Image (cartoon, rainbow over all chains, first blue to last red):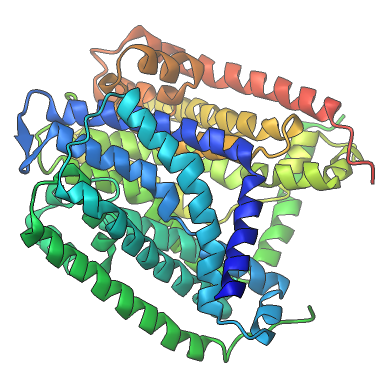
Length: 263
Length: 265
């Protein structure tokens, strides 16, 4: 455990180097939140509710979505593809550490970094500058737990793509395809109820929705009660365990094809 | 001094070699093309979902948005295909490899950009053309020869706008250590080019019209074809905007190139 914490600390320090980038990320978030404000305002026009959601609920959903977006991007796929290309992955394999946990703790350092430097400032701006009133309720209290599960899920997807790089040795196409699938199908950009009914129902059966739709709904509609939230958390937990196990099994296969030239 | 013909011939020779080299990684090309295809259709998917709940977005029907989207996809393709090397500029500047571009009797921007020809961008271009044709059939648009010429002219200018915004952002590399966030922001903004500009008001519409003229990438020029009888006078400036902005970009690029002193190693 101690060695994994050292990895976490290291990646946190690396993250600190990119302070200039944080300013731009926050600026990007502000612009994005403003644009989505205009977009959803013209979607709602004078309508009280759409698909059972009020404007405020939808806006909190999408704006918070953009604040946690950078948080839930682990970049593990890019990291691993770099390690494979450079051959440094070989040195990790010779050490008595588990690759999955190594990559997880590596990304946790960046997670903490962007939580402090991007997500929290963005949420503060949302509340104090954009004057968005986040309703208090049960959902808000469960949100942090749900977000952690969402992060672990997002990690599983990125780690899976990273393992696929053992085969393809290139990451751009895989990673972009994954990112689009995750952002669209998870309801990161549009709350799932806006999708056509059939698609909405199918999406609820897929793991993607547990990444964005679940935690964001908890904040946007915090008064749905335990009866709704408990099954949602259970589903998240189920997917985390399932995908953690599946990627571990896949690792045993993928490791057989890994070839490092030189080093 | 080389003539335009020399440059075209040279470009052809360089890119043939480049494509041959890339084609060694065929799987990568296929996966990347698929990725490109999905990522360029994402915003269209959002429009489709939204317009399933409401009849129109700020007065624009779904099919009109599809037309604007097709226009947008074609307009961003030249940037993707021909100027993709801008993404690498920070590495070259930081590591000093940028110096090599000073040592050929060629236009430096040409030489630098010619080092990459993004084949997967062709998927995007093809998809854009299909979408534009589909939307104009569904909208019953009347294509006469002058209108086709107008389309080509506006597409040319719109693609210059997109190229300029991105290359300008990339030029930040000459002055700041890590230009990636600047480029990243320009890239993120690009996604909003196919949105109807009339959903914005005040400062934002002003910004996207005059400061970061995203509106000229797709929305303003598309109006010439979608509602020719009711076009704001701004639209007629779109050809000028493209050329003017590119001239500015070229000037900034030259400034950056002249101020670069290498890394000393």
